[in-house]
Image (cartoon, rainbow, N blue to C red; front, side, top):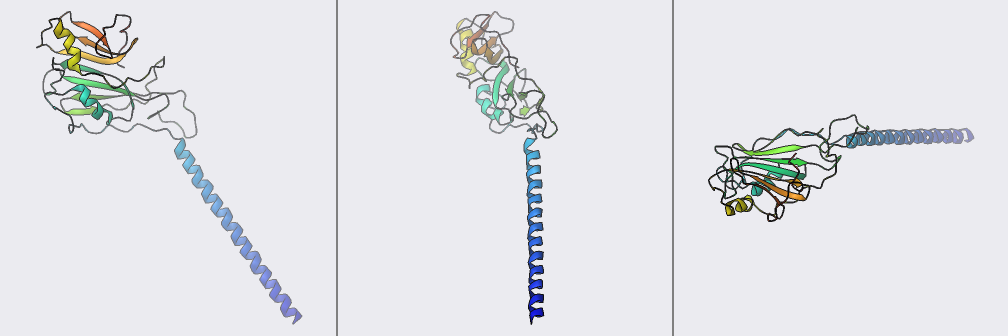
Length: 237
């Protein structure tokens, strides 16, 4: 009986030892899988956001398309075509005195310029876990033209401005109001203007040009106060 009891005890001990080994190996395997998953997640998370190819032109939602489009009304829709969140300005060509652009013929077109904050938005590709050589702001233009709204390829390596500049606020007026000053001074209303919305030395500004006439001026972002030459310096990137 003593030998039987001893054998049973040895068998139980061996079973317990095997069970402990299985549990230990299971813990090691689970820990390995978790650490591998965590490593893969960290590698993925460390990858910078990269640029995506631009989509096809859009015409849906463009009020007045194609013959009487207001650039300021089209701006919210233009934002949806880019992952760059900061407006840097726009340039409208062929603007009629009612503030609209005819995209169906002639010079009518608009270029919207967008960027990101430093280091934000799509960035140039780099090895996972490595730091960027410097912060990029990137840039993407969205055009309003005959085929509708269409984005250029994103420029992930476009540098940030040498001096920090705040993004432009939403325009406080439409292009008809910018035209009004020229009309008040006798400008012919059948001509087509070039109008820019950009950040000047004084802040948000509107630049108006009517080719072949003396009607050139820059208004502050409130669309009322005219800026001098030094204050109006600036451009749409």
